[in-house]
Amino acid sequence: MSAPMTPDAALARLRQYGERTSTWSTATYNDGTEKALHEIALTLAAEVEQLRARGDELEAQRAAVLALHRKHADSNHCFADDEMWPCNTRAALAPMDDLHDSPLSHDTAKAAKPR
Image: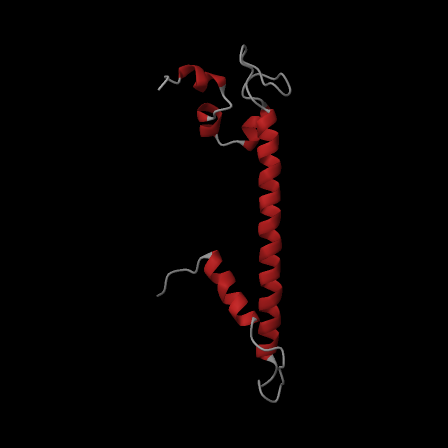
């Protein structure tokens, strides 16, 4: 049994299949199945690219929101909404490790030793 294909490898295979000639004929390719697979490959490859671009866009939006929701330097409150730290927004968008190890957390900066 072969190992599962990675998403990048699957996309590369889709693109390879999509690069085949666009001059299909049912006489040459049986019942048109290969032409249909070619069209499916082109469509799926385009969809993967759109989804990856949307994922990048959402990650940039997430990072922008997280940059606003940081701990006050002199209190245990969020800078953006004044909720107790970590605020609900920060807790929802950041992994728990981020809440303690983030350079945006002033507790981490205070505890860091100078080099």
